[in-house]
Length: 141
Image 1 (cartoon, rainbow, N blue to C red):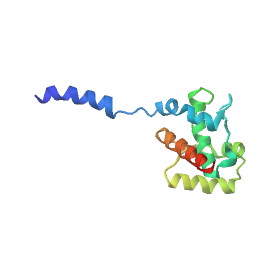
Image 2: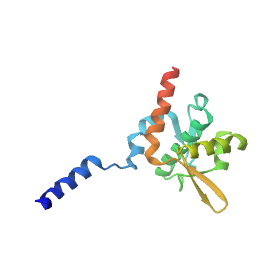
Image 3: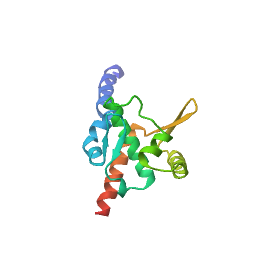
Image 4: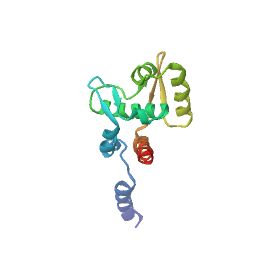
């Protein structure tokens, strides 16, 4: 009898409990498109930057990098400190404390390759961040 229940439970688990985080980019495409554009070089243009604080700009840039990787414009979804400073126009003195705060709050992840540090947004948090930014913009209007 237990043998007969297992396939049914297995099917229900697969159908009702399984999530596909890679689908987060497709699912949130229309929302992301309201806030960001990506270049063929793999950089991210934040359309609403004047309405965001520094940490939100970093998060949105990192979300955009996930889309750039998915489009094949870049090989990595992670971003070096130098790219963030150059693309967002943030000084190192501001960038490093913000990155530390974001890491400490588990909003972004860090990886080290050789002597360089890279940051990325876990794909399972994309929807949450985009909806948070959307709510902030709706509140300010």
